[in-house]
Image (cartoon, rainbow, N blue to C red):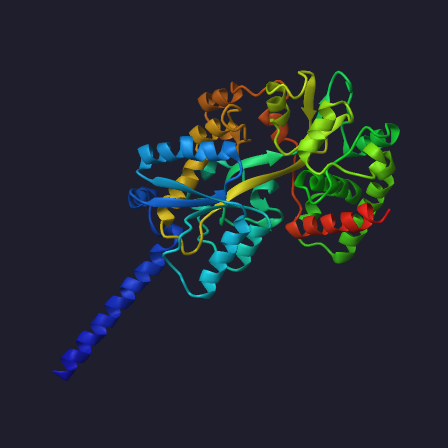
Length: 410
């Protein structure tokens, strides 16, 4: 009898281990075929934590994505609007430290940059999962602005769903031949005092102008995507501050004050006080023409060497309750249908995260025929002139350095 009990106990232990092993195995993205993922996702509620202050994004998610996902896959998509995703990341980090490995409230997050780096370094993300999404074949992972998130390799832990790229905005009637490179723009500013300015960092648009100057004086872009020496960074940063400090007396109001936001910069261009504005949104100028804030002679351009682009991603927390549903949502976000809808200027006008050239001719024609607005460049023109963001720690150091050396150092 004792032997029987001992044997039965061992069988029970083995069964428990098998179940536990199965649970561990099925927590990995490759545990199921995509058909099985779709089956398990049906009926799930995906809580998507994302910045809620962008009305176009909110309307796209709730007015289009949610009903389509319900119809197609039986998934309930529930947007959880937040002000700062870093607070959500902190919450997940606390759960990780407390050993809460399942049943998390957050199924999907809209993150990038420093927040992704924090999640990756602390093992807060599920995956790699991106490689298992069927629509990933439409994404060009060879583009460094996609494979790296502010210098941090994505490694399949995020899936893209949109793209942003800096464009320069000008009035073609007033400035018919704008400078086409960063170097030429710097010369133009010197020759046309008072006609250029940029928002004061840490405003993101003003900060990206500083990063363009950084790339220009460094003479290289790709070396900052991997390992670099402190000496090389300090040298390039010092040159950047010197250029910007020397430029300041020729800026609007002699550089004694800077616009506090892109909104103020756009107004200065509209009022004729400066000759250039800039935006991370390639369709911004067309939008402002449509709204009557810019004349219809306003146009955009990108530098010949390219302009900085970044990709926005979604990621799944390690302890998400509905991982399969989150994967299905992430896959649909990069479907031709969802990307076309998002690219429509009447909906959002966001740049595609997929490579249009990888689509069949019918879908390519649909993207080509989208109304873009008279000031918006083609996807082909934009995507062929993209530069990656530097690592987020470079961004932060340049912003602090600008404040110390350029703003306060004069």
